[in-house]
Image 1 (cartoon, rainbow, N blue to C red):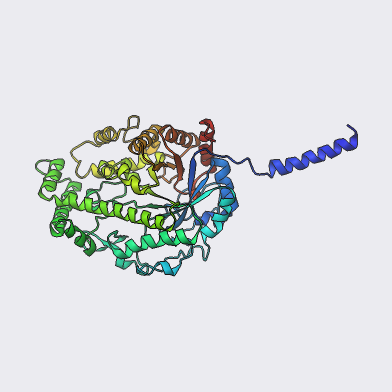
Image 2: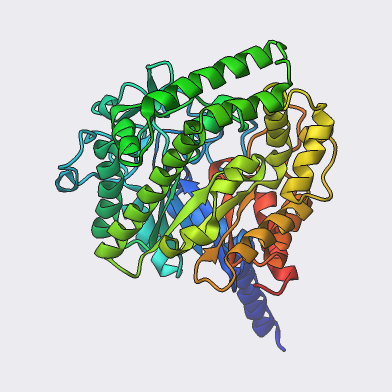
Length: 490
């Protein structure tokens, strides 16, 4: 090779190195399974659509975007939660002063004629329409886009006061009532709007709530108010042979019991016996709980039917609250097979890292009400036994360690067994950097990788990386891709 040829070859190699090396994009990771990620609109605006898709696709083999198109909550929208460490991408500042929430897409008024809730465009990002920006870019890569909205609102919104649930005290709650026609219609209207107005691939809806019975008992990791006792719930109860006045009287007695228990006032026959005495005296307590849950199921089916009437090929599924991992009462209400006829997919939340903190909060709550006679470690052991968790740590340790990949495996397998032989897809939600308190467990690449592998060993058809891209560290996101490679799923 002469000197000129050598120099030309060297120059060409240098150009190639610049083009295909330092400044080039890494090879795309192609997954054989559904790999989803939940992403808020602000991330696409902050970083640019292409960069977000690059990170998701190259790091974790993401092929499905669950775009937060409506919420008033920080759980799936907005930047990192204030006070938590900022991730290694996106704007390095919090949006405390700008986040409000609402719809991150345009609103077509013709679809909202049968509801009082018409003005809900998110003011945070101006006229930015996340679906208009994301869908074309995603389709070029063969990525699907699913609208992800949740049952989270705030007070003072125009038209929302007529849809609010009524608390046991008679006050209006921040939550909205499924039996209220204004809210029922709105939930269907917004799904129809997206299905007709955009070239989406599906819709996922989530409601992280439960009925009044578990709420009064404090049987969750968040302890919300007891609802609903509005006129629409009263009317529906009467059609089912439930006496609303008896139900309310029973809940007021149950509330007195819980308040006294938290003050250490022990009934003569103990806390657990007294709970059963109230349930036997007021069978309306469980009837009211069942009324609330059946109303949620009817709402899900109505959303499913509405979307399918617009375009039968669109996938429709549900986010199933993490309380399913802690509260046996709530778990009993989540019959996955019964939900399957109106579920193309189910996202069962299996957030492994924050589960330790949340389980400890749950045990602390029920351990000072109807289980107050049971030492809290024994109470945790009881829940481990009845929920089939075999390898989790003690009550003092779990907030610091989180739950293990064994939990992810057992919960996935349980859900997979429940759906066996049915067409509904199981896509567990995997925890990537969901915020926890200072000094408590934080996600690691090894833990995330183990969780993803455990989900697929347990029979998952895919996974949804959660809660939102704007709080995830890229090393932890890459570890999901590493799991796919190790299992020959990419």
